[in-house]
Image 1 (cartoon, rainbow, N blue to C red):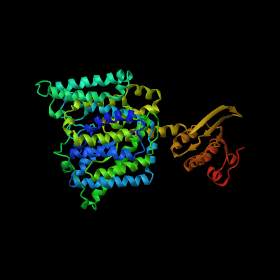
Image 2: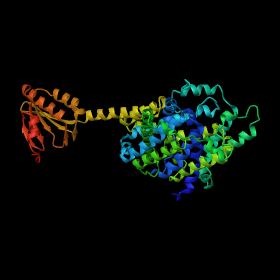
Image 3: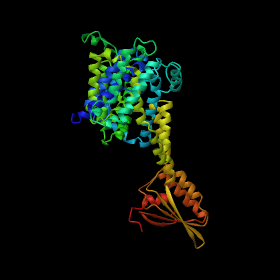
Image 4: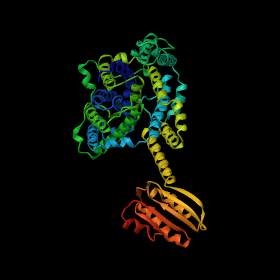
Length: 528
């Protein structure tokens, strides 16, 4: 696991800086104690990272579950009651892994997965713009378009332009310049610049800027614009920040409904992220999805027992890990230890990090996910790839992750049905022979009820006085609905002076009286 520690250690530092504000922000958006987000991040890194089969995926609290958590804490009568649902949700995920439910991951279209990555990249950039300019009202970790405060992604950006903090903006611009210089130039010059990552330098610069300007009237950065980690009075008092589940409510139906909801949504988000991270992985490794569900289930149960939020594999942290050169699961595990150690030993130092600097780090992550060149590439691949891709992107940006994915899948299914409609058969028309049009119609390998409309339309459009040669030699599956259509056509063909020659594995039949009887009674033979 530590074979590639030279790559994994710098990557883990970047993931740590990306994860820290998100853990706190998601906890805040969920109406949960701030420390619960950090616990979920620590468990996601150390526990899930150790058990996971993914080499580059990173787990932690997910923004997609924030609305569910916020609602559940209120309806279940408190955070301690909610933690019972988190523990049970983890156990249900373990059951999902035993039932091999991870196979679902292989049925997400590539265009939708790429749309998900691009949409999340755009969301990251849009959501970090207010933090970049030092807007105090911007909620970290809220990825939904419509926010609980009545604002939306774009109105929040507009509001931020009216409340620009000079100090926060200046250090954000400097941090972004350092990150670009490190990524484009310095990392290619010497190995030292690969070992010491740009985000670490940017964060250190941000802390120094805060320290030297905190008393400055114009450049000073408000405490509201800094990371806000809960500070225990001592290591011994750390336990007072923990919450524990109230198992006396385990018999409540609402607890079990919430647990199943958490398990279902967390599993779906994880499987989507697994598929996405596998596509981003430069080494093209494949994550065993059932093993991943098991790891997530164990992680959720432990997180709930310790007072943490539900965890999933998260694309923001995973993509930051990949972009920073992470090679193995060591980077995810080490980032979890960084969270744990820093919260215990240096919380005051962490609380000197400007959020605007972390926004600059996330800008780079978002851009690499949503490069404009990808839109051009998907367009070149054709409308069957481009339309589901674009719908997924806009769905995620203007609603949320799961709704956007759902819209993309729906459009993808419509595209499949449309192509199935078009590809049900092939027609070859020859010149007149003996006064009749000679038409050869060859049915596809699989013909289902989706193809009824296309085949019925083609048969009805045949001119009178036609000789139709119908071949089903290569057809491996012929739906009963299609056979009934052919049977009805055989009756109408007599009135329209259409002769039918049926060629199949069962032999050749001139003007069959009944297609149903032909396919039912004749054994398969080599076609004549």
